[in-house]
Figure 1 (cartoon, one colour):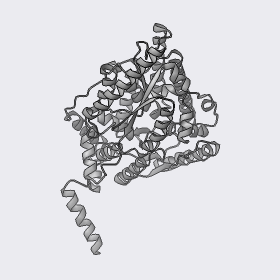
Figure 2 (cartoon, one colour; figure 1 turned 180 degrees about the vertical axis):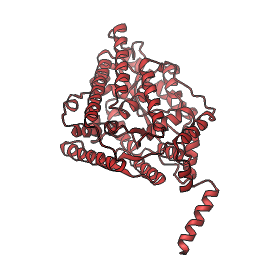
Figure 3 (cartoon, one colour; figure 1 turned 135 degrees about the vertical axis):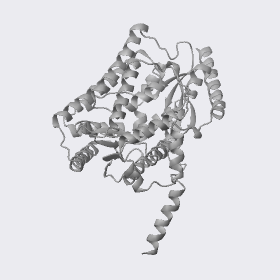
Figure 4 (cartoon, helix red, strand yellow; figure 1 turned 60 degrees about the vertical axis):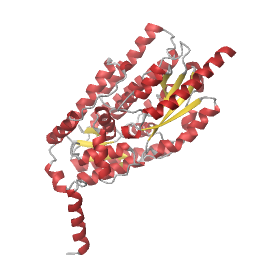
Length: 455
């Protein structure tokens, strides 16, 4: 026997004894999805976690529908006879719906783990298996859950290269762990006609590889229907944002962050149309009830935009801003001009899917992104500043933070950057954050009073 081979096997045995490595036999023994679901539920039930829930996020019709849709997809992912494809936030679920495949979004699942208190267990397992602590917590959490055998055994793995390089490496690791084939959608950095043509070709290639690997033929009629569902979702999304902007209505940052992951992660399904339609109608009811009611600054409260995701394990920061500091927070997306007419008017299915992915992935320069901000809307909402929530280990968004901060500062907006984590509660200390929030709130109120006396 070659000495290097013998040394490798000895190392694997020693690591296995310490609980650092899951060997192939264990993976095969526990491949039955019912057992994996039972294991996950046992972990969740034993967490003993109590979350500080934001009271005014509400159990509205749209929230209930979105939740039930997520639960349905989650349950189908663990069924023995389901065809399951692991995906990320940037993907074309319409292709999978047309093949009767479950798009199991493991990136979104990390937020669910944070919500139910199981994230730290999986983070610890990931770190014991040499996933560096400075890596994005989504990566550490998902890989930890896979090693702990709490994810459903996938049939295929499909993911995108942009905007997150760390996520791409996570999917490579999952492919190696489960010994399953993968496909990478290479998302161009620039959003132009050449990019659309290239990406449309890659989507076709992905569809072909999934068909050949799983022995499934795409139902063209179902694909066309899924695309129509996507377009219908985008129409409602545009109407909802424009309605809020017209009447200067705010939206819950907590609800918006949670809704958006479902809307665009499961776009192409009929259930998501219902969820976003109900959300639009809820906004419409507020307009009918209050008219042109600027509920963000009507009582002279300072108003700030929230950029980035939020800690899914706790709403303490947002609660403190709104309830203790008297600061109104609106999602940053309400300051962006939304026009989906060109996207919806795209007849070619694959060009439509490519354009949608380029938009959702944030392709294009940060300068282009900032130019889409409607600074008139900032003035109409009476926005005084911005909160930038920096996700630990997210090198993509952190590298753009300076540009975004400088752009806001040039327009005389006060900016507060909060370094935190939306999955790993260990990367967050409210006592330290509170001091900075108090100083920021005091600055905003003082400026608000000075502006009032000048006018």
